[in-house]
Amino acid sequence: MFEELESFAPGLSKRFDWKPIEAGQRVQIIKDRDLQMGTEILVSKDKTYGTLLGASPGASVSPEVMLRCLEQLLPSIFSEEGAKIKKSQIFPESDLDTLISHPDRYREIRDAVNKQLGIIQPKALG
Image (cartoon, rainbow, N blue to C red):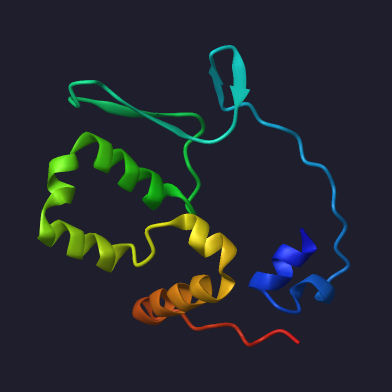
Protein backbone atom coordinates (compact mmCIF):
# COMPACT_ATOMS: atom_id res chain seq x y z
CA MET A 1 0.00 0.00 0.00
CA PHE A 2 2.79 2.39 0.85
CA GLU A 3 4.52 1.71 -2.48
CA GLU A 4 1.30 2.56 -4.30
CA LEU A 5 0.87 5.74 -2.23
CA GLU A 6 4.47 6.68 -2.98
CA SER A 7 3.96 6.24 -6.74
CA PHE A 8 1.11 8.80 -6.73
CA ALA A 9 2.37 11.17 -4.06
CA PRO A 10 6.17 10.92 -3.81
CA GLY A 11 7.39 11.60 -0.27
CA LEU A 12 3.98 11.30 1.36
CA SER A 13 4.44 7.73 2.60
CA LYS A 14 7.44 8.84 4.68
CA ARG A 15 6.03 12.18 5.80
CA PHE A 16 3.69 10.76 8.44
CA ASP A 17 3.82 7.88 10.89
CA TRP A 18 1.42 5.70 8.90
CA LYS A 19 0.08 2.50 10.44
CA PRO A 20 -1.86 0.10 8.24
CA ILE A 21 -5.03 -1.23 9.85
CA GLU A 22 -7.63 -3.59 8.50
CA ALA A 23 -10.88 -1.86 7.72
CA GLY A 24 -14.18 -3.66 7.93
CA GLN A 25 -15.86 -5.12 4.89
CA ARG A 26 -19.07 -3.55 3.72
CA VAL A 27 -21.49 -5.67 1.73
CA GLN A 28 -22.85 -3.77 -1.21
CA ILE A 29 -24.36 -6.44 -3.46
CA ILE A 30 -25.61 -9.97 -2.89
CA LYS A 31 -25.86 -11.64 -6.29
CA ASP A 32 -26.22 -15.34 -7.00
CA ARG A 33 -25.82 -15.93 -3.23
CA ASP A 34 -22.37 -14.31 -3.27
CA LEU A 35 -21.34 -11.13 -1.47
CA GLN A 36 -19.88 -8.61 -3.90
CA MET A 37 -18.26 -5.20 -3.64
CA GLY A 38 -18.58 -2.26 -5.95
CA THR A 39 -21.32 -0.86 -8.10
CA GLU A 40 -23.06 -2.84 -10.79
CA ILE A 41 -24.95 -1.42 -13.75
CA LEU A 42 -28.12 -3.24 -14.81
CA VAL A 43 -29.89 -2.33 -18.05
CA SER A 44 -33.11 -3.90 -19.34
CA LYS A 45 -32.90 -5.97 -22.54
CA ASP A 46 -34.96 -3.40 -24.43
CA LYS A 47 -32.78 -0.58 -23.01
CA THR A 48 -35.76 1.36 -21.67
CA TYR A 49 -34.42 1.59 -18.14
CA GLY A 50 -31.27 1.04 -16.14
CA THR A 51 -30.17 1.14 -12.54
CA LEU A 52 -27.11 0.96 -10.32
CA LEU A 53 -26.83 -1.71 -7.64
CA GLY A 54 -24.66 -1.40 -4.59
CA ALA A 55 -23.68 1.57 -2.55
CA SER A 56 -23.80 4.84 -4.39
CA PRO A 57 -20.47 5.28 -6.12
CA GLY A 58 -18.02 7.70 -4.56
CA ALA A 59 -17.00 10.95 -6.20
CA SER A 60 -13.85 9.40 -7.65
CA VAL A 61 -15.77 6.88 -9.77
CA SER A 62 -19.21 8.47 -10.22
CA PRO A 63 -18.48 10.03 -13.65
CA GLU A 64 -17.05 6.77 -14.96
CA VAL A 65 -19.98 4.71 -13.64
CA MET A 66 -22.52 7.13 -15.10
CA LEU A 67 -20.71 7.10 -18.44
CA ARG A 68 -20.84 3.29 -18.52
CA CYS A 69 -24.54 3.40 -17.64
CA LEU A 70 -25.28 5.85 -20.46
CA GLU A 71 -23.20 3.81 -22.93
CA GLN A 72 -25.34 0.78 -22.15
CA LEU A 73 -28.67 2.63 -22.16
CA LEU A 74 -28.03 4.86 -25.20
CA PRO A 75 -25.37 3.12 -27.30
CA SER A 76 -26.44 4.85 -30.51
CA ILE A 77 -25.47 8.33 -29.31
CA PHE A 78 -21.96 7.12 -28.49
CA SER A 79 -21.41 5.78 -32.00
CA GLU A 80 -21.78 9.24 -33.57
CA GLU A 81 -18.49 10.99 -34.34
CA GLY A 82 -19.46 14.20 -32.55
CA ALA A 83 -20.30 12.23 -29.40
CA LYS A 84 -16.96 10.41 -29.55
CA ILE A 85 -15.10 13.72 -29.74
CA LYS A 86 -17.08 15.22 -26.85
CA LYS A 87 -16.55 12.07 -24.76
CA SER A 88 -12.79 12.22 -25.29
CA GLN A 89 -12.82 15.89 -24.23
CA ILE A 90 -14.67 15.05 -21.01
CA PHE A 91 -12.85 11.75 -20.36
CA PRO A 92 -9.33 12.12 -21.76
CA GLU A 93 -8.49 8.59 -20.60
CA SER A 94 -11.25 6.04 -21.17
CA ASP A 95 -9.48 3.17 -19.39
CA LEU A 96 -9.25 3.65 -15.62
CA ASP A 97 -6.72 0.84 -15.38
CA THR A 98 -4.31 3.06 -17.32
CA LEU A 99 -4.61 5.71 -14.61
CA ILE A 100 -4.03 3.09 -11.90
CA SER A 101 -0.97 1.56 -13.52
CA HIS A 102 0.56 4.73 -15.00
CA PRO A 103 0.92 7.42 -12.30
CA ASP A 104 2.46 9.89 -14.78
CA ARG A 105 -0.65 9.70 -17.00
CA TYR A 106 -2.84 10.17 -13.92
CA ARG A 107 -0.85 13.26 -12.88
CA GLU A 108 -0.95 14.67 -16.43
CA ILE A 109 -4.76 14.46 -16.51
CA ARG A 110 -5.13 15.68 -12.91
CA ASP A 111 -2.92 18.70 -13.57
CA ALA A 112 -4.80 19.59 -16.77
CA VAL A 113 -8.15 19.37 -14.97
CA ASN A 114 -6.87 21.38 -12.01
CA LYS A 115 -5.56 24.06 -14.38
CA GLN A 116 -8.87 24.23 -16.20
CA LEU A 117 -10.75 24.49 -12.88
CA GLY A 118 -8.31 27.05 -11.47
CA ILE A 119 -7.22 24.77 -8.61
CA ILE A 120 -3.84 25.67 -7.17
CA GLN A 121 -1.47 22.74 -6.79
CA PRO A 122 -0.06 22.14 -3.31
CA LYS A 123 3.68 22.56 -2.96
CA ALA A 124 5.68 19.40 -3.62
CA LEU A 125 6.32 17.20 -0.61
CA GLY A 126 9.85 16.52 0.31
